[in-house]
Length: 97
Image (cartoon, rainbow, N blue to C red; front, side, top):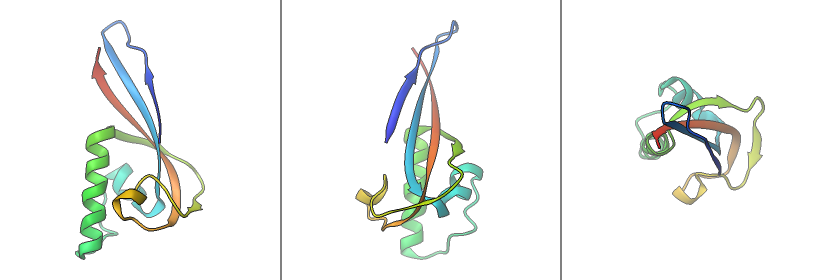
């Protein structure tokens, strides 16, 4: 995870940009809110809950890297998600200073 805060503009709004390495098959859900690629299995339900938690914590996903890379560990590994082809996703969270 890489995070940086963008200084506030004259209206007092500031932004935090966070980059996370996450499974590439999460892209449709993170970028478009499209969960049709997931089934109603306990493991998919767990991944959906993680995606929703990430969006709640880091804001809107605004970009993803172009090419996946295989990663044994990534930013969802600690939550039980196994090694996968991953993309770097960029999130923007807006807040008042």
